[in-house]
Length: 378
Image (cartoon, rainbow, N blue to C red):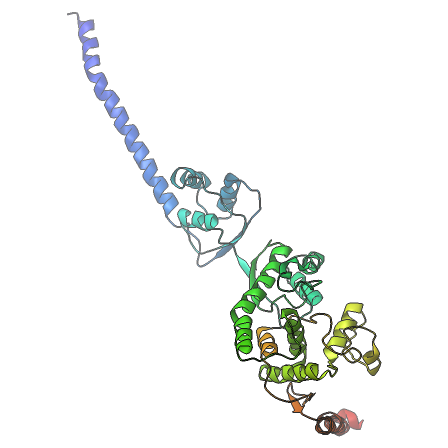
């Protein structure tokens, strides 16, 4: 064999080893890259201290856009690795839009798990007892949860409560007072539906069982014939009684008046009518008692046409089970509590003591204090 042929034969014998060596190097490189990627992706992204980063994902964003946004916000170390993991390890599930808070360090899988589950940041808002429909819409809008008119439009549609109150013209009285948590961007209709859903839940869990108990004992709240009338009564109780312990007593007064056909003489119903007409300035005057409105319970006997505010659970329960007392009157002690009376004579004495005399004495003390002050002596 010639020397050239011997060289070719020798190279052919070494070729498989060279190929094997190259393959081994490639495999080692791939393994090293995989180990680096795994370490890079599964290691928590380094963040100084307990820094919180808030990221808002816009609805309609693609997965790629979302992951790049997270990388740019220092939440993910590598958007491309996250995309590979999302597709080939998790099966490419959808990522939810919304506002997210990432506190401290988090691994890639932890970040993706939050977006897949849609664990968005929520903000609390408290609806206090006794707000009207318009006041509730204003409070939600001013708290940054949506547009006031959009809230009003949703609240003036009674479909959500129609089965419980077929006579309802709107959702007045059914926007349950509570503390809620909503994600930014939650629609006005969804928020209103949540308030009504909470009312229905409290009604079914607390009010209805009490009514069943009352019915089983043969007890009926005056001429109340259904849930609508009970909610109307509860809304009046809510506006009249500041002390929770007194609400069954206030409910008893109105239930007794309804039974006897006595007008309710409830100032809050007139105030509600003035608010609805845009004429409420914060002061109830004697002339307002002559207002020609079906909500004027001084002129029109019986319950007003509808609820005048959103009653809380305590007022609903008081309306469902008023105290077993013969009271027909009550007057304020000017400290959030009331004095109750069975007869008009007794009531007039209470008015003399807790209104006329109380205010005369208070005004006299204020004049005396003013006169004794250095400024009053100038």
